[in-house]
Length: 370
Image (cartoon, rainbow, N blue to C red; front, side, top):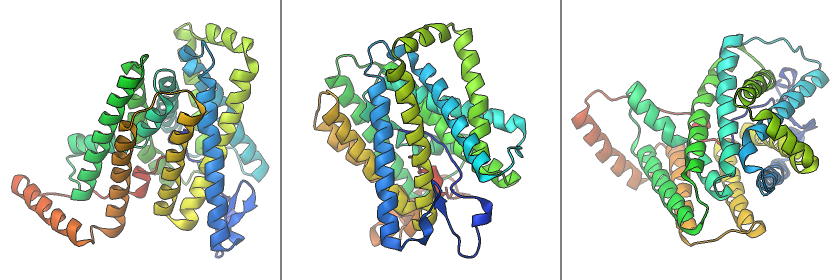
């Protein structure tokens, strides 16, 4: 999860979803607070947990010799997430029995492994701010895949949002390659694979949860539990497990201690973000998490020695514009005069080349990446 990844956890038990809609986060009845203190508390928690997550992830990879062992770190994280989910289910008194078929869980687990594993590995090759920028642009592979595979068509605002993100990513990556003497396109490939898995997993998770009425905590337990064995088998087959284990035993606190803190921060952070979505809406949540990402990037440059160029600022702003153009486009349906006129022109061009056009309306979760 910077903890930058696609993970969903339960923010309350089903018996809490009554008329008053009492919602708990980390065991606290947050919905009983007045709106303003409630929003401030949730926003502060988002910043605390995810800044801790980003700091710990980058700190782990400052350890000399850690670069090749990103998948072993992912193995430890999967074990922690599965354990946290199991404890949450046990303490809530719920049954641990699954409802979603094992085959579906295996698909979810494979995508979760790809999302977190490639993301963690990329930190060993890329600047952490670059990885954060990439993880903010899930809309790009979603749109490309929908157009190529499903033949969908998107609104003008969504197309412009995708173009802004693409230009921002290219500019940020070029800036990174210019100022970083050890820049490697291996990191770009890894984070791109993580982004692709992240774009696929959301719809599959949501569909399975709705179809089988499965608790999201159970989804975390089984997807991360199964994913743990996938990673373990992969490390054994590639002969990476023993070298990684040997390395970690030399630095137990630097690897295991920080990994547990990393996992705890990510697990708690997602619960807070989902609570923020439930109580204040996706647009407010995206605003808070976007500012969190911006602050994470700033702190990364301040706390860890990095070269800096003004191109980072302009490219980051392009991505930011893309995020908000997409979100506001969905909320307002292009209600501003400028967007209305541009939307009409765009639709005329689309209708000229393809008379039968279906506008695909993605949910807010497509862009919701914490």
